[in-house]
Length: 266
Image 1 (cartoon, rainbow, N blue to C red):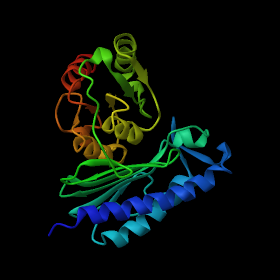
Image 2 (image 1 turned 180 degrees about the vertical axis):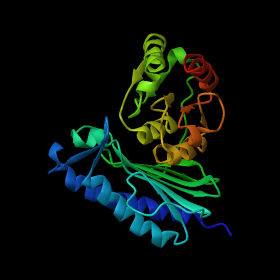
Image 3 (image 1 turned 90 degrees about the vertical axis):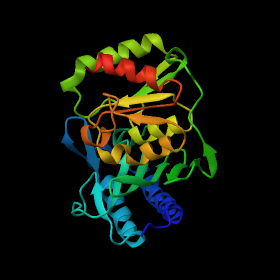
């Protein structure tokens, strides 16, 4: 039996704001000597880990039968549950540890592999983006939609440099070269979740990155789709959760962006 996804979304929003209060408090006294390196350019702090524990504990109460897919692995991995929480307790850790912005909490709920709740709380601006199955997309109660830009030449594009980027470094550089020369601008913010939320509300027109994980994108994918945007992988297919290649855009530039990314990342 399906649950009341609007009610769950409201509870998740409240929880995300509570945990953001903890992250904000810790940011005041945070220093780089408290950082661990998982791999090159992939960092974690006690703030990520403690935030994840707080989220997991509370989310267990909201949907007790749900499993978990989490970035920091502070709880047991999912074992075939129909409901799954997919969470990134602090997306944009590199920004956080340097005292930069943005960074966010990203929480999604899936049911039988379909995302049914998505919440992204951008901490430094205290903005909450959210959607649930069948809803519109919202930013702090106001309905949002993707932009109306209809040409790549007029678009503002944002991209990500994944932790493990060297396997496709030539293609990454080629994409940067192309979009720097052929759009209104190219941005690199350091938070996939925030970028997807910004595509959903029209601040960016499109976004691309490879080697992403489900917790980077799950909430954002639903929020973009419910805001009349489109998401696919670099081949134009819907295997982004499996292969980690994500392209998101408004309706106006989606085909053009997809074609160009397909040419570059063969």
